[in-house]
Image (cartoon, rainbow, N blue to C red; front, side):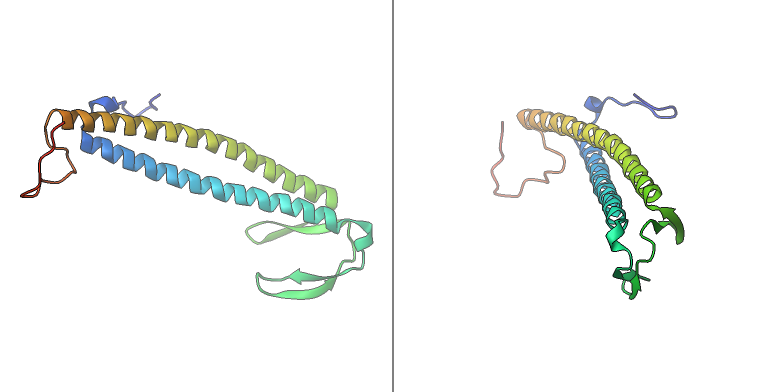
Length: 169
């Protein structure tokens, strides 16, 4: 369905070159969406790993346990877990919040659930794009085939070279 401000064009009315352009654009969009899906899946897995880490840290036997505290991506300092019931979590853009173990698990679970809903929507969009690419490829193949059968030149195929036999359908 066309959105307001957009016009609908029957792709069967497009010529071979235009169909090739539409196919290229759809494939680029599909590639971008697929990359976005992979990045979202990675983020979701990180949140799930955070849930496991918080649960593991929250165990009573971890009190006074020695550990390494990350200050940057490459700098860690030795530390000791004094209060396993509370953790400091990164809520983004350099802000950290102290939360109980249960609150931290809930926070990361909500993030993972939110990403899951976006993944499902994105998966539907990717499926529709794949169907669109398939339809365009089908129509493109039909048009190229009919062009060859009619004996006409196929745009994008280039001119016939001297001495090269001409193929007729």
